[in-house]
Length: 239
Ligand SMILES: Nc1ncnc2c1ncn2[C@@H]1O[C@H](COP(=O)(O)OP(=O)(O)OP(=O)(O)O)[C@@H](O)[C@H]1O
Ligand SMILES: [Mg+2]
Image (cartoon, rainbow, N blue to C red; front, side):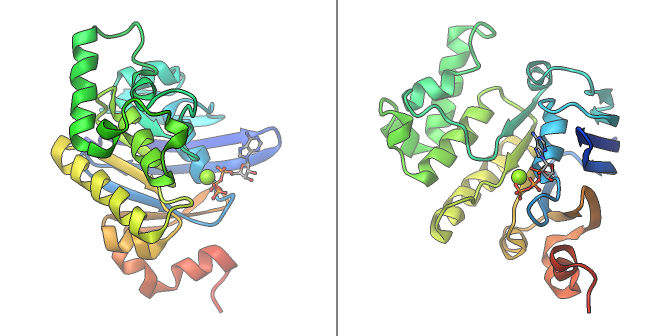
């Protein structure tokens, strides 16, 4: 059985069709990159899976259970977590307070403390800056915080929207090292929106290429550059 399956998913904003009945399945422990030009529907796809955008049509399943129609909180409780585009950390709260956002009334304090300790072990820089306001962190550190916050609910599936946005290449290396390390450690299933196909090829995994709300190619990230598919996605039909 697939860990995650998307069947004929459509998302519309008024008259605009952001996702046009797309389908794909992800195996447990798989790493899937989603690439494609601005407006292709990448963020809408992640948001629909996480339950923060309502699907107009179609069905999303995790472990064979239907997620469609559940609230984002209910989906998170079932073990799916999202790191949103632009990170959305709370600049005025401390690093530690950011990690606690959303853990609220749901869990006992001991479990929350254990989860925070695990995140500090995975991201030592966050432990060092635990009491600093999150707004004082560098962009790369803020991305680490956003990832750590998403992992606080102990998800089995994590969706990450453009973790490299606005970061220097060396910092992007570091973010991906942490992401892949945590994936191996926790057996996570991961879907990552990544504009750079070269980056996706280097990190390694499967890649779905989107354009106009559809998946136009699906294969090993390392094979994409050779196949002119990226030029086709970005610029229209190949010459
Ligand atoms: N909340 C919204 N209301 C109306 N239209 C929206 C909304 N969010 C996205 N769209 C539109 O839906 C389409 C898909 O947008 P989406 O953000 O999913 O694309 P994307 O591939 O993530 O783009 P980017 O690379 O710029 O992040 C675009 O045409 C966008 O303008
Ligand atoms: Mg986006």
